[in-house]
Amino acid sequence: MKVLVIGAAGMVGRKLVSALLASGNVGGRAITGLALADVVDPQPPQATIPITTAAVDLSRPEVSAQLIADRPDLIFHLAAIVSGEAEADFEKGYRINLDGTRHLLEAIRLAGQGGSYRPRLVFTSSIAVFGEPLPEVIGDTHHHTPLTSYGTQKAICELLLSDYSRRGFVDGVGIRLPTIVVRPGKPNKAASGFFSGILREPLAGQEAVLPVADSVRHWFASPRAAVGYLVHAANIDTALLGHQRNLTMPGLAATVSEEIAALERVAGTSATALIKREPDQTIIDIVAGWPKAFEASRAQALGFRGDASFDEIIRIHIEDELGGTIG
Image (cartoon, rainbow, N blue to C red; front, side, top):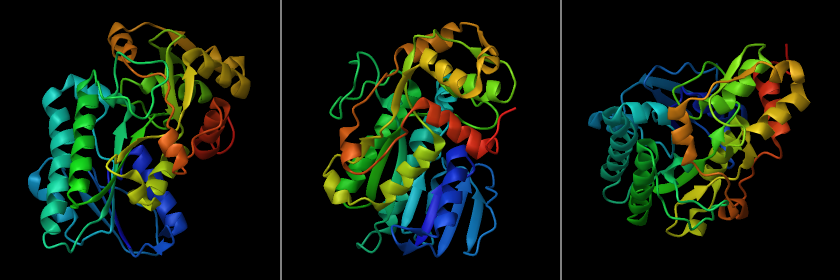
């Protein structure tokens, strides 16, 4: 099986690549080649299977055709610019998040003319496709009402994925990821970045800024869970999806205050004392229209599994990023 990962240099992409190399297979099918692409050249770990890398701009129409020239059997499409950046730069958001995905789908369609090529395409969408008015708990049949450019771009891509799958051009699975915490490394431009920052920085002994109220409630998953969703999406029987090709992933609903309480249980009051409350109206306005909780019953019935508790999410970060210790 040949596998292509687009967005392989990002946080989730790197962890996915490591998981694929560790297992050596997807659903019992051995990985015989791995191609990695991102806007910067991915730096893969050492491996016994052939790995190719490419630094590319997916928004250029010819790039997708080049990436699938070797006819990968499985494609993970993780590439996107994040919510805050897509909102700040309207043209860039549509060019990367929408046009890039459309070019990829078109390249697959054209490569498969005659019925010889129909890869599994796992696309990372987002719960940002939903916006107010919202129920307290969102069911699987709730309609899209995005209130950001990023959410709109992801919603359009979900429709494209479903239509290209309906027409038989691609075997698509779209997974709406919860907000991923705790994200390692430096903060990015995502409006949701503070959800990780108020955990990551205190665990490293640094101050963190909380720009919203403690009462803000949201939907979360760990990076480890996100990788599990991607791998499972590559394995499921898509006949079970029917024409509903996009799934909301299981997650954990929690308020900021519950996040902070979990941090205190795991790391003590010395960590939570490093959180500084500095309201930011721009972030407050963006977050106000975000969903708070989901049923995710379709995904659970298909075998997708999330995290058990916020304490577990924090401990996963400590294990995976801090060597199992803090301080």
